[in-house]
Length: 96
Image 1 (cartoon, rainbow, N blue to C red):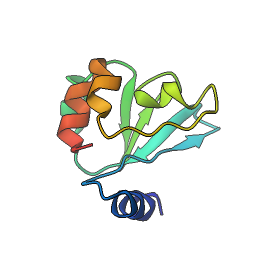
Image 2 (tube, rainbow, N blue to C red; image 1 turned 90 degrees about the vertical axis):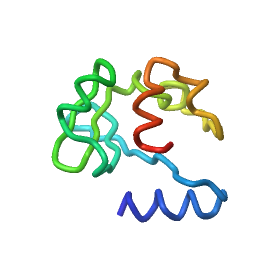
Image 3 (tube, one colour; image 1 turned 135 degrees about the vertical axis):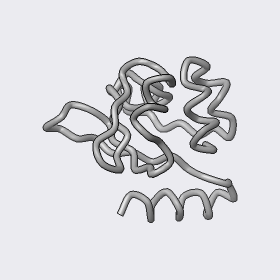
Image 4 (cartoon, rainbow, N blue to C red; image 1 turned 30 degrees about the vertical axis):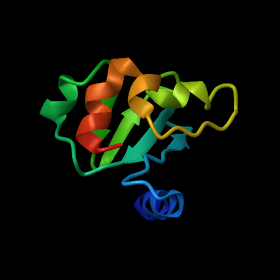
């Protein structure tokens, strides 16, 4: 379902891709569907990230989501690389 949402969001906004996640209450993390990462790649892309099946998991204060998740404020950017330099390599790899 999330992959469909990502596709629809990117199409509606005229973007190459969109990165849409959801809150997993049980695991206390945000999850993003992706098939573009291996566990070995993830180890080189920054702390606080893990893979579970086809889901990238991140703490709520990780990735660019930290700017909107905790304060519950929406954020739109066409240049996520400048919003989160720490994870820029991850965004490039995922073509976000």
